[in-house]
Figure 1: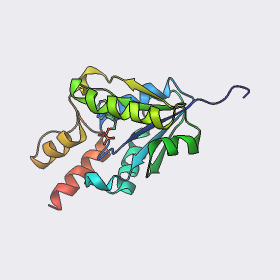
Figure 2: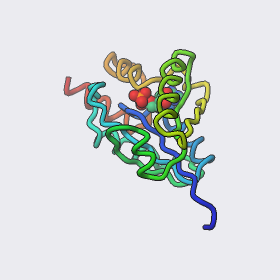
Figure 3: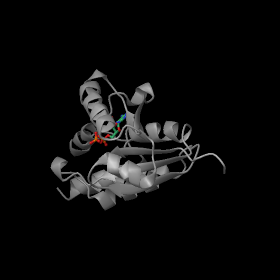
Length: 167
Ligand code: ADP
């Protein structure tokens, strides 16, 4: 290929991955040559699932998903812009839901731009069915015994239920 590959990094906690995240992945895969889903270890957020478990749930959820171009799952630690430089990515993908996401995302995008001018943050909006969906909400619904099919793929649902059984 003569033209340089366009690589995008989609970072997040994915604790666990939801149909909302997967909707964004699918859209990004139609815009870029390669998308890397970068799973943050995130010790600050005290995730419910380990990074390995979160990566496994994403990998399984990608099977059968309509993807434009290859999507890879990786783990990252440290500064996002350092990771982008390491893998040669010029774009960071983030999902934008309700207005409540805006403030924090704006801060993060401008800080990342300050740290690495060559990396652009691209926001994608999910299908409206997923606008109010978050991993935290899904964990809460799972804990209270609610129906999960509209929010997460089957394998993620079984992991959530298994986790609940463990207490
Ligand atoms: P983080 O801890 O980095 O916010 P998340 O896993 O919560 O990690 O989210 C990763 C990215 O996915 C963020 O850009 C977030 O806005 C986006 N996202 C999360 N849920 C949805 C959803 N339902 N629809 C669209 N984007 C989403």
